[in-house]
Amino acid sequence: MTKESKQSKGLIIECNNSDIIRAMKKIFVVLVALFAVFAFGCGKKTATPTATKTPGIQDLSNLDDSQKASVQRLEYTDPALYQYLQEASKKQAPTATATLLPNEQKKLNKKQRFSSAGKYEIKGTAEILDAQTLKIESFNYNNNCGLLSIALTRQDKPGEKIANLKDTNGCTGCTFTLSIPSNIRLSQFDSVSLFCPNIEDPISKASFTEF
Image 1: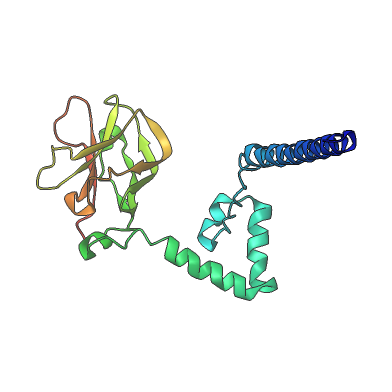
Image 2: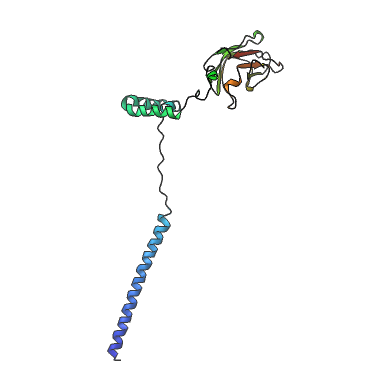
């Protein structure tokens, strides 16, 4: 083989090696780019937009005055949206009387006076607002027998407390909003009675049997 042939062959081999090196560099760059995309791109989570609840008409009690005014203005500025909110509120907020029996519903929103107990100066009214709320208003008690218990009872078993709702000392013109236990239906009691600590029978009661 001549000297010129050897030089040509060496040049070809050198060129081929350079091409291979450049190709490997390109592959390396591509692999590094893919790795970066995988490592950093896949690690990011797309934020899911949170839906904002539009207050229904029945939700106004939870808003401040400016928010209430904004919702109420919808009646004039966007009647269609106002109507939609009204309908949505009716579906989302069923009335408290929906699950009550007819004889239980008759007890609602009837103010009944506590019977007279002159020695203790008992006065006031009891009213069942819904299945789980009892309100006592304008309540007077002179503390003549100590801590007074307010309890749910039945007239056929006057001395038996179905549930004790509150204990109170003497007060004048007091208002109590009391929770009726969720496991007690309105049909299970027919009166609200007041008990002194050392007396078995109630000293006064408000009856819900007249309806």
